[in-house]
Image (cartoon, rainbow, N blue to C red):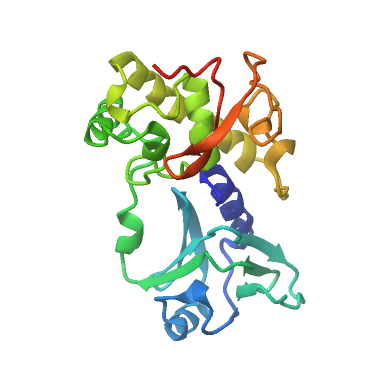
Length: 274
């Protein structure tokens, strides 16, 4: 599933349509991506509306339109946003398209684990405002992280880092990367961290989010199926799925196993299980 930086990358693609009017809305009625959303209302409100701006929070995107219309998109496992020419002919999995004079904004999702949300009103909808504060925000403090770890004291850290109510935007590969950088074993219980380790975990969460946004979200128009072309070989990401992969820092073998219900990679030579 796309994580923080990949979601921001795709949001920026549709940024090409900021300031332009929507001439028509094309969508596949009844598809799962519209579950819980009134497609009739969506069509009515967006046709003729101007796309004013957009932003990202966690793994979701919000697009703001004139007339008090709010469009939310979650990419799920296989979703992607594209910009196509005005004469583009929709493909099978192009479930939602906003037609503008100079382009078409396309949401494609072959597996349909993603979703389209829609609301109207003077303020952003509740499904947007209830998303946890960003890791790079001022409210993501060492104290906030420490308190959260205490409440999840008996859970393995890998599972805790995937909890969006405190670590929004962090997914499987980012969680592994954070723990590797912090030299903390993914099976460590959340309540076992010492104050210095909590500070390290907090710092590496913020560092990775900042670097990932610069490295991935800032990469032009194209995001390859795997991100290796954008991510430096000094990251764990480069080696985590290799058979016989080695830790970039210790040059010792990496290990893969299921932790907290997710496939996890770590470096035993660097991440000790105390």
